[in-house]
Image (cartoon, rainbow, N blue to C red; front, side, top):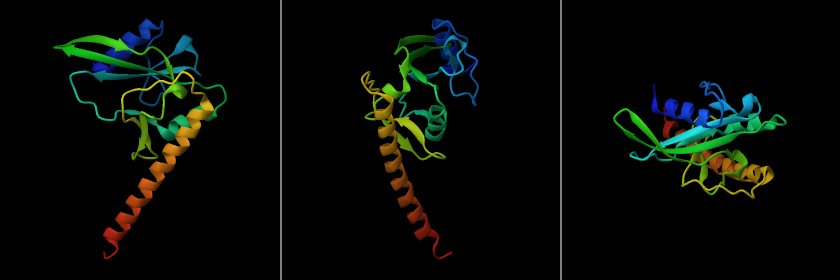
Length: 161
């Protein structure tokens, strides 16, 4: 079993849940079996350099949160691995998505854009959903400008074909 899956199962147990997430699910487990309260577990092997890990598809997050009453939580886990043994060193506990500061996030090119953690996690417990959306809009505007420049460069590169 993959390390991330072992960690998801362990963290779900800690929260009285069962990790039954699939690649198509928005979360790795549900809080109290509530379909509107999924939890996404993000694990980090401390022995490796994990550059800008993917958090979630920007489009998928927007579509999920547009549906009234839907919430999304993250738990960020640091772990060590010795042989086949996995030791969870720390976890953040439940972090509502809207409390993750855009000071540590960016949107990068993958499909419609993927939200990545570009710096160490910053949780802002005073940040409300409207402020989170403003940060998302700003990050998407930056992403779109970068993508437009890339498309212009491709157009220039192939103009003589």
